[in-house]
Length: 434
Image (tube, rainbow, N blue to C red; front, side, top):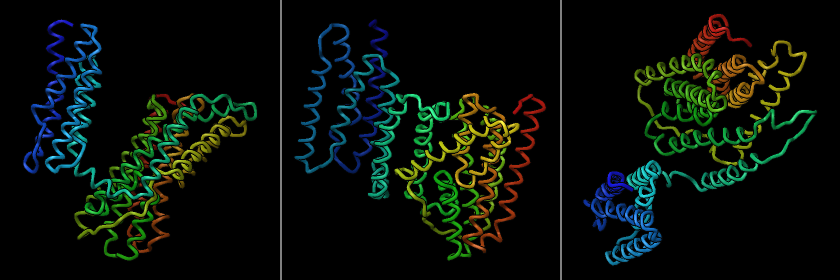
């Protein structure tokens, strides 16, 4: 290690340690800070120096340093205990800061910075994280635990599965199980973050916020919950309609992400994006208008099942697998001339447009159907899902239905026109074929 590299690593370790130390100093106004803006940079520098000694002199010093700073952390705990202070966050931060310095010493700059920023964020978000923990119920935590265990067990198993022959075809060539599991994980993560946001700050943001977050979780459930709310609170029909429209916009955004994830060429997303964005913009514009002209809002807790449990994950995975099988069968069947039967699968959009989007995008990525056909089916599924909101509203609230049908129909028509224009452009100008 030359002098310039030594100085660079020293500076990086000091900077990351200083970032953590600055956060610790924020508590000085309301409690005694034993280790702060000077101590943590020194700890990070200590980690770097122990790594330097081990690399340059061949002396096994990193573990020795870990023992030394571990002892310091224990002393720190005893000092805080003698002052009648509780908590183990700072002692743990001491050990992590030491490891960060070691990472810098070994040249893992990006990893060290990532750990440092994450540590600082967790320390800084103490109050909000505690509030978030109180908002999550025991049942939701159990669901999250079950989902994580299954995901981390199931995904490795799917990578090592052998052929599954059915009717002369390998099912694993039709249904890419690793991709299905990863998609379920991705959708569930998006949904769970939104679900927590609804629980954590939804009650202070009104129906519109609840709507768009609910759309990322389950737009149909969000629409049903909001429209049912109007039955008891008819004066809030305008705000509830805005929430339903934003729920639909959230669904569209999620489907664009799903299409890009399952077809990394982004060709399917190119077909889907413009109609989806047009519908989303129309929905958002109306929502903002309604918030300004709809009078005083109120709080409403959406009735939506936690997406981070076994049941939602299994249902989503099963629906994706079923859709993939049906699309494959229709594409390969000789009577499905010009693959017209594939378009019928868009009707599953009444249940889950996300499952349709993933299935057709994945088949397009593997070359089993064209990206144009996949994008068309995904877009039609999104259009059907949008119209489905009208059916849901009608079933739950006649009052809201009378206000909503023209607006929802307008969103649908805007998306349909955009879809036709994009489809003509791709077929005639760019020469895409189905």
